[in-house]
Image (cartoon, rainbow, N blue to C red; front, side, top):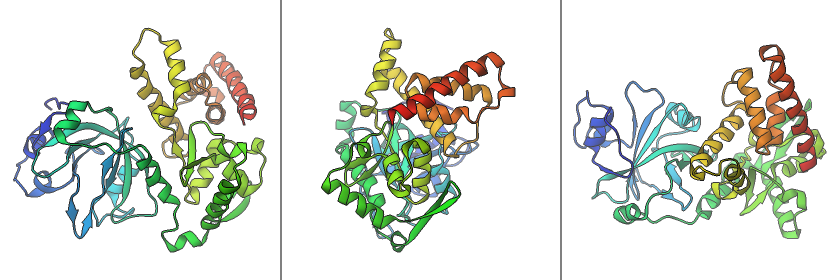
Length: 364
């Protein structure tokens, strides 16, 4: 396959000739000549997105944009729901295994510009037909001359956060009904609307310190970042030493409260650590790798991805300890089978997991 050049302009035919040279291209017809979502032949799970800002289709106007942090708000075809097979592929997209290539134009009279690959961030679980998905541009930032050439105006970062906060708005009847999760053998029925109203009351009165104390993930309520652990504590009354952050996030997700991962700007501690450890390297080389590793760990812990080998799990425990992800390190070690790991390495990892447990409790 010919090399594809980042930030270069391409027509639909040129993109077709790169990804599907053995098929026929017909202008304004067929998948490559007309569609916005195209499956790449012989590459399962890989797609090309053609996006035209301000497009209208079937009575729907697409409200799509890119923020200053490289988050793109993207909408599926108006007919697609969560049950759609491709939508499910997008919601479980793993940028380590598959690629979604974004070609974007800001008006119909110009060619598309290749903006690189996409990484799934989150989606709005209350809206479908179309489905609203937030992606991270992996090749970020876009140079200023390219922004000017394609007339792309970046939106403030809080556009994304405001969009995420809408996830918690009562837009459907099921928001007024109780949903539930099971914890410690008990079923906890939660009225999501009442819970969010309770949090809003806390915000007005003044949140306790533990409500705003979080590390990598938070839940957005009207622009206020809320600790998932505090929210879980608010529901169950459990002590903070009885559960950890990944468990809290998992249970909250079951009732439709989805945690948001900290942005690149917020990862100051991790960035500084990498800079100390690798003083002669370009810091921008390491931050995406670290974020990808953290994302992979989170997917394992919430059950979205299969568990890797025991040796890899031990490696990741060491990683979590090094970068202060103590709760995650403790949980990863619980998945390790001792007999499958070199005894010396297992004992060393066990000590780090014990330290993770101690520091996790101390931190909370």
